[in-house]
Image (tube, rainbow over all chains, first blue to last red; front, side, top):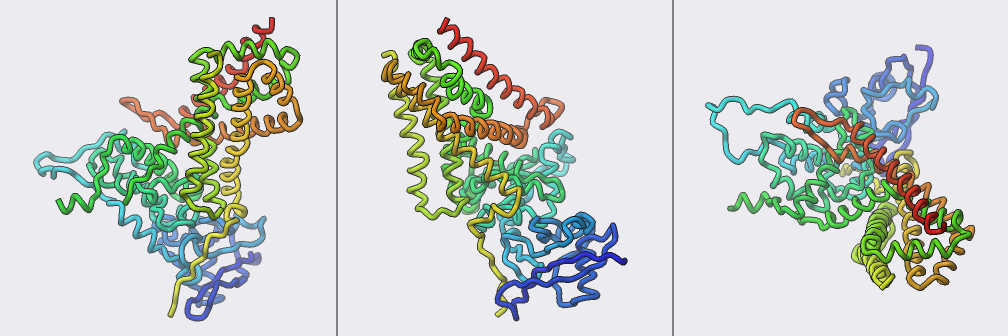
Length: 251
Length: 118
Length: 134
């Protein structure tokens, strides 16, 4: 552990700070030290007041998203060795979200958007158990499988300038999840979800920057989902299948 | 949530983008460089050929498609670029300026094409 | 009261990240392509005014301004074609009864089509115009 690398952290403590400030820390590294390991080192050995989110250490919980040298990355899936040439890492909370504290972004907006798109199977008629399993062919599964791999880490929102401009935009993960169910052969909820997707804040705020898909740690390709959603929404402009969920609940 | 009218703009943008991707480079080589530079010594025959071509209804239709779809494609991108660049202007004005502009220019082109060979 | 800190997106947001710069460059292809379309419209207009007017337009095409514009527009059209066709397989999903056609194949077919489209147009125009001259 003779070698070290310099990490610049953006700190924000809401009780004391009126705006974020930079703190520089030297951290020892091994070939296999992840940025999350480095943050844990800092918390244990340098400054216990540092706040950040993490849990699984293996890119499945989606908690440790941060900006690393201006790119949205998972701390656990990014290694210090990638930055030896740069000589320095700059770590801050994910862009486009309010900063709750230090490296913790307030992803309430993202969670709200995900909840708003009916992200579950909707069926017109309940199947009796006697009909057995609701079967799906491998091809039917393949149609939406990649879109179902999302771990809600929020990196795609940190990458999306349109969400950064307008937080009302449903954004990559929520629209991808809506598409994931719309493309599921067992689901009948497309007319309901189209009501959201057809809106300006639905698929039409997207300008296909495509950076969301570049930064996605699970290769979900949200840009593909959104732009396939534009095709669906364009068809619906003619077909008028969209049903406002509020009005159907009343009737 | 209110349905957006963007599908109309996006369809025209998409059609124009596909057209420009497939024949755009060739078109520019022909009308920009081939006509002006390589065939510079024979303006009369170039005129006769193009006149004959644009006198035919199919030629008119092709030319109008190219012009109109290119206009809608480029104006759509420029409209969204004003948003991306944070240019402050009333949205209604920008819609009229970009999509209205593309429509008016397409209309003018249609009228001009109509008059050729008539 | 502890409040989250909200950063506003700066107008120059696209300058600091290469992915955003590539995006803006892609969108910027519209500018020279728009200018080219205007020039094309003037060409059609001058043609409608008769041979003399059209010949003047042909002469104007040889001006350094016009040649530069066309070279820039050509570069923009090539960049547009390249970036546009990269994105086609993300939007266009094709199935047969048994399998999903690979995105790479869809992209390659489109690229081949674009190559044939542009080259074919130049060859056809050359035959058509040169024939008129002979």
